[in-house]
Amino acid sequence: MKFLSLIVPLLFVILFCYAIFKKVKLYDSFTEGIKEAIPLLISLFPYLAAILMLSELFEESGISAALIKFVSPAFSKLGIPPEISKLVLLKPFSGSGSTALLSELFQTYGPDSYIARCACVAYGSGETVFYISAVYFAGTKRKGLFKPILISLLANFGAVLLGCLLCRVM
Image (cartoon, rainbow, N blue to C red):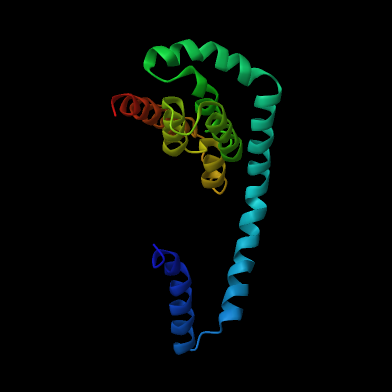
């Protein structure tokens, strides 16, 4: 395990040695890369700000609580514990919020419980779809984003369903 923690530093040392051997000006190359990243960051900022604000509004407006109350019985029939319904709905919007919710579930039910195992699967098999979509599609002028986002959400939900089924069986 100690060797694995050295892989990234070793890669950096090897890369720097190779750059020195090839007579590449490391600092100049680094600053050139940063210059190219700044316009990208500026173009991404409005999309990321919108996603972060929408996810906060979703939670604070009470829509999240109403939606959780509405879908919990259906989730339960599908094999997803109702206790993790909030996590399943929050994960596509907020990674940090779902991490906090996962910690809360661990404290409430214990890390070895069935609910905690299902929560881990829901957390690990999902992605912050809206954040990733904002980053990926910010540079494109494409309008038809409904399909890829819907497919991503359905894939996340399918992974949670399968994961909870496997948690029940194992």
